[in-house]
Length: 210
Image (cartoon, rainbow, N blue to C red):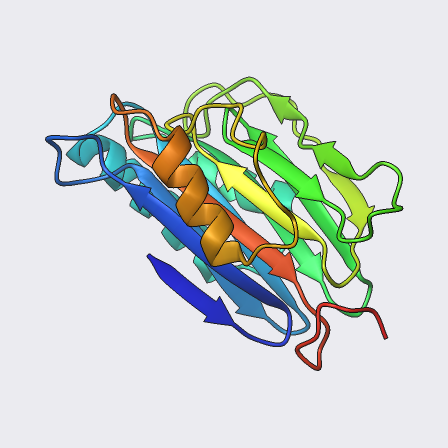
């Protein structure tokens, strides 16, 4: 488990391989680039070494060109992963100067965006997921752009986490506390599992606007 702070985001990841396995196909990426950061979670199909190999290959592609548009990144992953089992994934590219996040998902890595402002409407948004496999059957790709303010939070979770994981989330808690609690209370015992929790922060390290 890791926790990192910088002038764009603070984040924490919690995850593990399927009980009895040493390798996990559920992997994450937090890759900084000029004036932004690429956030991603990939889930190699199945479990074990082959799933982990597919997941690692996807992470390598994403890290190589983190500043590129998310659709281009997924297309590049698709070509690289053809010889593998393939992966499902969700990505979000945050641009600090524009104060926007572009996100998309292929497969079933859940994505949730929670506003830090309690008066924001809507307070919560869910990532539109398109059925398919990166490296296998790729759907028509589409990405959405949403504005981001300091204090807003992004959560990605693989299908090893039960999909009711938002039930007890308190947006005021730290990413570490939220990720660890989701993993402890909602991780299935039959699959690899991973949750990545990210809070967007101001350049001065504050979660408050201004």
